[in-house]
Every structure is written in structure tokens, then in C-alpha cells.
Image 1 (cartoon, rainbow, N blue to C red):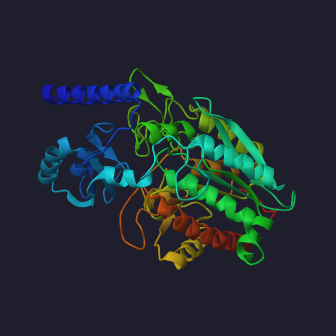
Image 2 (image 1 turned 60 degrees about the vertical axis):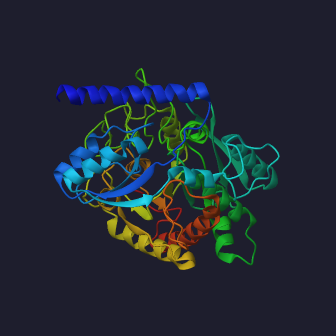
Image 3 (image 1 turned 90 degrees about the horizontal axis):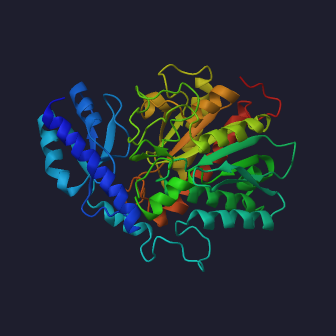
Length: 441
């Protein structure tokens, strides 16, 4: 690295530090006025290397997906003051680009068009808005009060002391196979927790006129955690909308670990599946299970391992259904059965709104990723473990929004996901995965 490059790196790190400090002092959300999002295609080693070398974070470039391999398409956020540098880099390396978002702040404004980031106390809970952690937790407790089959679960606390809350919905204790849903382990993926609460409500309120949903409610032992990474979520609401990680302290100026690179399964710090740089969005942590959120959740999962027959993660936004593995292109022993379930699931998801999903193993479908909850559950419990990457566009209008789904997308996204869960359960039952006596790996 020459002197100019070292100076540029120092300047970029200093900018990140100053922006983060400013966010704490000002207590105002960081704005993304005139920030653009481009989708770029990686077609050569040189292109991959230069994209991976870009400094990311507040007041700099930001990836929606990390550049990992040739053939991958990634979305990158460009600040206006770096646009000319980006254009020069693109031209020099012959990278193909496509404009996806003209002004990032416009989409962020649509998420809460008439309200401040702080939640209004008198607002009724529903699915036309995104709520803060306290409001979500209060709603979960209200469901426990209203329905005998609901039990609140506490699977530990976060780094900043917030509860990791879920609900157990079980109308036939000891008779139903279990499904575990983990949602919003990545802070910026707001629509995942909103969709999880919508699905909880549908399960609890389904009538005989909705037999397929009622069947799910009556005959599955549900463990649903809408909001795993509450610290990161609150930070994304109040300071930096695109925050992804936890909020633990890492070194002097960096914070957070990617909680979906931190599970103790083929874990690596650096390499193809995660980053060793503590400031990167996919930093794997100083060690596996370094984060209290992942450690606590894994311990709770192990405590109920005999009750779980299927594990599902809710993420966004790539229009995908992902299967193990993430650390290798080699298929799992159950790959044919998993693909059969996935095919039925995405077909059902498409039926209502016409949303198209692709599906397949993490490694070959999206990018290599190590230390994920999905792989850990499959490796440790021997049960099917799938990850949804919710829609990234408004299927009706074609508008791309990525992580910043407007509130009017919560219900249509949730509807198609619930439709797909009906098909997933039916196919999993057909293949023998939902039997109480099924032999796990």
C-alpha cells in the first residue's frame, strides 16, 4: 500500500469515527439525501478485489450484500460526494452498473411519512407502521393476556439490556411438532419483525373460514421471535437507518458484530464467508458466540431441541429462499428433500401477488456465508433449516426498495409468506419431517 492509499484509508476511518460520534451527540437520524443505490455485476477478479477494498460505513459506501465472488450482483449505496470517484472506478474496471434507487432518503421518509422516529404512545398497534421495541414487546404481552395458548418466552437479553422476547403458540401441548421462527437478527431489516407479528396475529385469530391458517395454529407448536437484534434495531430507527450489526463494543472506534456470522458452525473471522475487520458490516466477531444475543438464543434453542422440527429465519431483501450450506458448495445429505420443500414453498408464495423467489443453498444462491444460525441449527439439531430473503421490490409497481420497504408492503409481503408457510408445512409433513417420532440427524 503506497502513501496515498494509506492516507485515504486513514481519512476514511476518521470520517467514520467523526460521523458516529456526531450521531451520538446530535441524537438526530443520519440523512441519506441524494445517496444513490447501484446494482453492480462482478465479472472478473479485479472487479471483485476493488469492490471488496472499498471502505464502508456511515458517510461512506455501504453494501446491501457483501461482494464475495465472481458472478455475484451486489447493491452499493453511494454518497453524493463519492459519486465521481465511484463513476471513475466503474469506468476504469468496466463494471456494469444499474441505478436502483435515485434518492435513498425518499424511501426512508416513506417508512414513517408523518411521524417522528420515536413511537407515539397513543398509537394503536397494527401493520401500517414500524414500531419500536417497547411497543412490539407490549403487543406480545397483550397476546399472552388474550389467548390461553400463548406463552411469552424470554431467551436472554441483548448487550444493552433489552429482553429477547418471543411467543410460544401451542394449542395441543405434547402433540404438535414444533417450528421455530427467528426474525430480524439483522437490525436494518424492519419488515421481518413486522411480518412476524402479522403472522402471529393471523395464527391466533384464524377462524373456521380460514381452514389452512387455522390448521397451522391448531397443529403446530410455534416458537416465534419477531426481534432478535433489538439494540441494532433501535439504533437503525434513531441514528443510522442501514445499521446491520449488534451494538457491542469492538476496539476503540468500531461497534457491533454481524450476528448471522457469529454462530459456532464453520465459523471464521475473514475468508470467504465473513470479515475479520471489526468495522465491516459482516464482521464475524472476535470468536464464535461472542455476542450475547447469539449465545443466549442458541442456548434457548438447545433447551427445547426435542420440541423443534423445522427452523426458519426471516431476512430481507433478495426474493430468495435459502437452504444449508453457506460455508461450502457441497450439498447436504438432505438436499433433494430440501429442494422439494423449497419448490413447493416458493410456488405457493408466488400465487397471491406474483412475487418470484429463487431458491437453493446459501453458498450457491446468494453468496458464501459462514457462522449463520441456519447452518448451526441444521448442523447441531439435524432438522431442516431455511432462510427467507423477503421481496426487495413492490411486486405490483416494480419499485425497488431493498431494506427500506414502505409500510404498505408489510401486509402483502406477510400474506405471501404465510401462504408459503402453509405449503412448506404440508410438504414437510408429506416427507416425514413433522412427525413427533422423526429421527433427526
